[in-house]
Image (cartoon, rainbow, N blue to C red; front, side, top):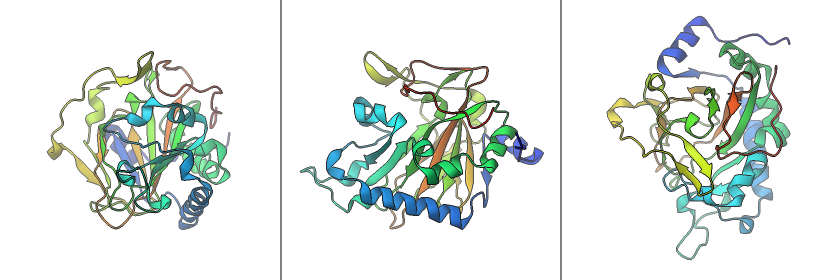
Length: 282
């Protein structure tokens, strides 16, 4: 295969203990610039009159329409909650109105595919014990200046569940992520408590199977990182980010990986693909 595990024993120990790991300088400035430029081109081509779907982790209203469901195998555009005025018109240019683009960038766009299937990413997954990993979703997150929405405390396994659970989040900072512009926050070690609840798709639409627990904000620690850093996130880690009220955006490219060897994709997940994704290796 020619791919070798890339994490040191100290890195693996930190990840297993804390539930996340920061890998500084994972991506070069050239890689970052190529992805940012490609997204800029995709936004140029996007006609905002074709959709007005808003992405919100508080209301999950996006998860009630076919545009969202079909995005699992497409490159789709989702607006910030505060992007529109009372009359439904954009309050700022479209490039400053998009919350995220997803969920198949890694498959359909050559620039994002190149990073998503790079040897360094494969080496990381090999270190984490993945036998036949697939990228189940990928998204470009903008965290727009002034209106970048809050992401409430959650676990990735809630949305992307396998039996047994195998999801890992890979969050690449394309700009510096700070306290000011809405960096990630996590509860260290919270992954050891297991999965709290699931986000289910059934005949009634989509919904959580249990109410959200209340979390003490004092338990969260900020994960401030420089552009090019990769944050590896255990699927059961409780994490969040706050609104971006600054004048600086916080772009990131986020991948979620699950294994397909020795586990089963839950049929009541929101993602129901017509064609299975190609394994990265294995």
